[in-house]
Image (cartoon, rainbow, N blue to C red; front, side, top):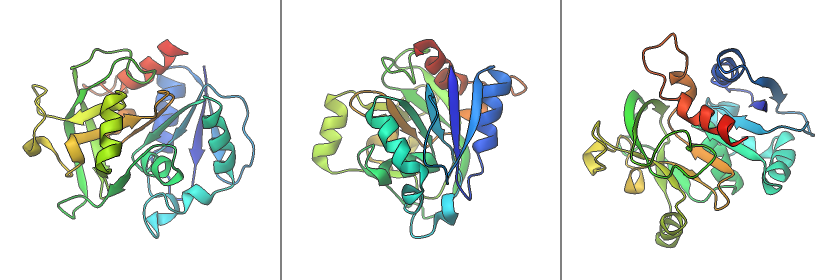
Length: 228
């Protein structure tokens, strides 16, 4: 399995993702600089977390104009697997590869915490290594993570089983009091209709090294390996 990690000015989780994919999971992994305008053949491309272009205007708004994004769009349209984590999720939404928007947290504060999320769909390349209803504990670190979409879009997401992660409590209960940022219906991660593109606010790469007591983030990466 060959992986590519896109590096924008301001990316700060690119090395975390590289470490997990290459050094922990042993996958062939390469950097993709934002000024490149073509792609090699990859089985997975990761848009990492961070503050691409300093989050000027709004998170992801400038990154979508990077030279590499034209090739990323073509890669996605041809069915390539694409994972956007935190700022990467914001970029996927800005590009229109996923529906909806991410707004300022309802608290108007930056949140850095480890939270439980419930796996809502185990029939995607990003979640097949676990089972529906299982609870993962994953870190979040964002100021603009409140997922919003209009009523029709939300219905489509539900009808097509596109919601893959929801904020919950440790037992898996989804409720407003277990929602750290005010996301509609506690949404923490979604996929496109064909299940080849995934965006999530939690950071699986920060909870996947066996040096740490919790490796729940490996579920995401091992699912991708399993489906490759």
